Length: 630
Image (cartoon, rainbow, N blue to C red; front, side, top):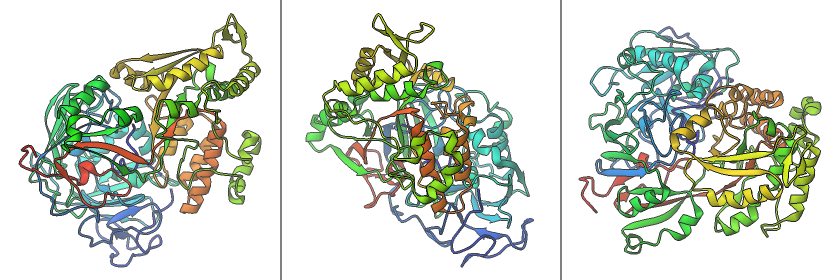
């Protein structure tokens, strides 16, 4: 699973238009906040304790802590898991570098715990960030210059002060050698400058995307001194210097990485940090084999597990420790939008250039049979790129949508102006001949004919499709799908490669079809560009796995990033959804509205979880902080 942008507000995203903050229009001083002209700021500039896309911030300037934390939680005790979310170059099954922020290697999970960012997100708010390294933000009236006032208490783990020079060096490294999606996100940041040791001036392009400042404010800040002697563009197993609530203390390449809580962490009493990061150690375990990982959990090799396989959830959690109450098996609500999960067809390859071929492949996946026979009816079908969100297109376009779409009428399929495309519903038999006939007709129209039981094009080349995977957990999900493709004359195969090779092939777009999941923020921003733009399609290592390169999609993304209010953003995203769905770039899979979790009964947690995050590492604590068995 990819890390959702809700969880990545500190780490990646972007987006235009001045940000509206508590009770204030642009250039006006919100109640309880003072105008400021110091540090080079104009008299019209306003000090703010946080940034938001649209509307008010939930927390006022004098808030003491986030509502969902327990400020009296004891500190200490171990937490361990197999990681379930991944960012940038991280892989689920191994690691060979401690730098996940560049294009090299497979990054270790959890590294974000050792770093601070200028601002940090709240788990119970749609898209907002609050003071962390920066105690205040001063925004010039034109909305293009932001002054971040750094907290003078900020320190790296070696005791050295964190200053504006470190921030400047960080952005220079990320813009030059950062992961492709980071570089793309920072293209609207034209300058990051130091104005004394505790003020960072960030300048943005005119017409910048709406969420660029939040993205920039959420990136990790590195040590300039550390960067000066280590090439940021290279992979490395040297432990980096951070300033965050944890430090990396132990690791064994490809097996585990362990972080220790920093007892004298400089930011422990910040309103955004109180009651958070309570565990004494946080450890990520790696298993090359999924079954071995499950056996490791049963043997208490690690303490927390999130289950993503319905079959395992239904059959594998009836072992002695569960029956004895030593392991808790629960679900917790997932209030984030369901996002995008499916098989992505690599349209960079000639075989997928024709939309009719892509639709035929869609028709040959029988979700109804698979859901019942493989997934224990645990999932619902995904139909939209914005599943279960206000941005999801439904029914006929509204007048507001038609106004946006009309200029593109001669550039998109006619269906864009009707009901949005949804994947086919089979008869559930596993052998729906009607859908197979429809697929055969589409393939015929695309120029394919059957020769000796195989589909060939006009040049005599066989239509062959390889499904690429890195662990084999979805082999059963692929099996019936591949069987249907073969009956249609398509030479379909399923190939499992090791984690490092898989990561490299994804970065190089060296695949036919892969499974991926992306999550959308409640207010989508620059992830739209990262997932769907022509620019991303051409950038090695980008998230645009399908290679979508459509001028209409690009135009709608630009419009979304420039939306002046939430209503305009919703309308634009619905239009984008219609156009993307008409392209048949993916075979939608499924979603669940819950997190399925199992954990050894040694933890406590607040009564309410953060609405938009799982909140486990963030807010839970150990019942036995001395680390002894509970």
